[in-house]
Image 1 (tube, rainbow, N blue to C red):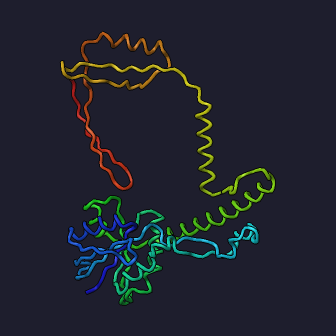
Image 2 (cartoon, rainbow, N blue to C red; image 1 turned 90 degrees about the vertical axis):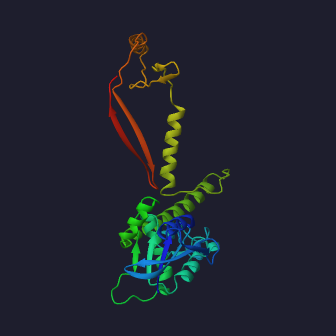
Length: 310
């Protein structure tokens, strides 16, 4: 019987997927690293009887770093960091994820990747493949053995649909993440070292041990500072709000919201108040109800409208 090895991005997701795909018939056990469980069941794949094996990683499998000889601030000019070699290391050595993947994937015929459906997830797909390809069975001829599942919600409908419409992992998206990681590493480390040493030498009294810089961190800090300045310089202005309360019955009252929301013109607000405060009847122009469906990426609202008048 052939094996199908499947990988999710985190242990809880692996369990949810296994329960849906196996119709809650999977058997679970602890993985070799103690952090990622393995769920197994028998079923059909590509028209043949197979043994499914579902496990997970815990985010990125590998991280990017400089070799040891480039980690000395005193011996390495920051400019060298733009051209020196880099190397990949285990993202979390304590979890032993690469060893866990190699052990569980050994002898598998097919691979189905259930990583998150974004560029980072695509990058993790290829981190997983780099670990397990040496231990997979060799494919017959040009048979496709690597598959990618695309899904947007952890529901039975979405997961079964993804299983029926498997694609291939996108290597270009993965490479774009590799490029971004390398830029972040080189730019961040080079400028952090440069400006930390510069300000230490220029302002001896400074007690800052590290002045960090990052391609994402610094612009984000700029946004935070801009927002902070706007809050500090904000000058409050008075405004007026109308909030009528109507009696539907002796035991039911409704608080209405003004479509205009508020007015900075006191006289205009008072004029609207005078127009409505003595009214005895109202007209309902529209009734609606909303149903919210929560997915992994967003909250979708469905609005049903009823026209009525009374």
